[in-house]
Length: 231
Image (cartoon, rainbow, N blue to C red; front, side, top):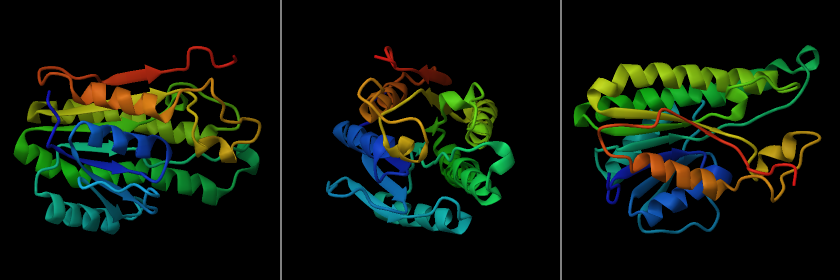
């Protein structure tokens, strides 16, 4: 499917996978709205607009959608739910505030954004929602119980929504990246980002691949892992 000229919303665009996805979709000719608390530094493009939005706040999400449609037009073809964070720690010493922060961002924010765009996508009978989960959404990881719980939730949400909206011509794809060289590991003790990990551009390229599939089918779950992570 040709995605040139279509409108995409991407959350969490300041760096990492979000920023790489913005650049990849701009390269394909899309109009891109970036939603986030922080704008991507130095990213200037005639087809990119940043809208300040904390996805944890449903009112802010609705306002961001209103502003996006005012600036880029009513149609919304793509939503990439990328905003998220991970906090490590053993359960019995884990902060309830950190637990709530992860769920508010990784799960509730994703729900607010998806809920916001679906009415327009249904009117169009066309749309594609991409949810960025994690390998942590497929298997438990010690000292990452909270993060895994949020990503398992994203997995269940994605698989349910795809069955709800496929009749409306709307695709839902969930990505499960393994270790990717981003700032994610800055706050994860004992793990440092390194060159043997996947790059944010690898995830962005996979998103483009999913978006360009012909209308008659879609990729539901995509698991990605680095080939030689211990190299």
